[in-house]
Image (tube, rainbow, N blue to C red; front, side, top):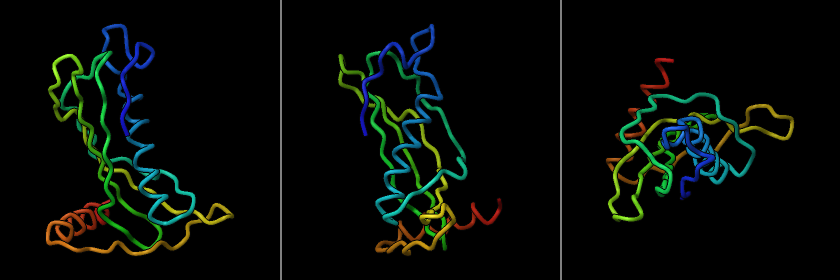
Length: 137
C-alpha cells in the first residue's frame, strides 16, 4: 500500500501523525490476514512498533505486510513502512511492527484458519520467533 502524506495527515510541525501511520499499517495487516483466511479478521494486538524516520507532508509512505505466523485462529503479520522523498527519490525505512489478527466466523467468533506454508529456512526462523513472542503474552 502506498500513500502520499497530505497536510491533514500531519501535525503542526508537518510530521505525519503516528496514529495515521498506525492506521495504514493496520489496514495492510488486515488485508494480508483476510486474504489468508478468506473471512473477516480483527486486530487483537500490536507489538514492537518502532519509529525510525520522520515522515513529512509530501513524502510517499510505502507499507508492506507479510504473514509470518499462524496459530489455530490467530496470525501475526510483520508490517514495514518505508518513506520516499519524492523530490529527491531516496527511500528510507520509517517504521515497523507486528500485528496479531484473529479470524472471525459469521457470528463474530474466532474461527480456525489455514496453516502458513513455510518454504524457506528464513520463513521458519520468523515463524519460530513469532511463536515464542506470542507465547510470552
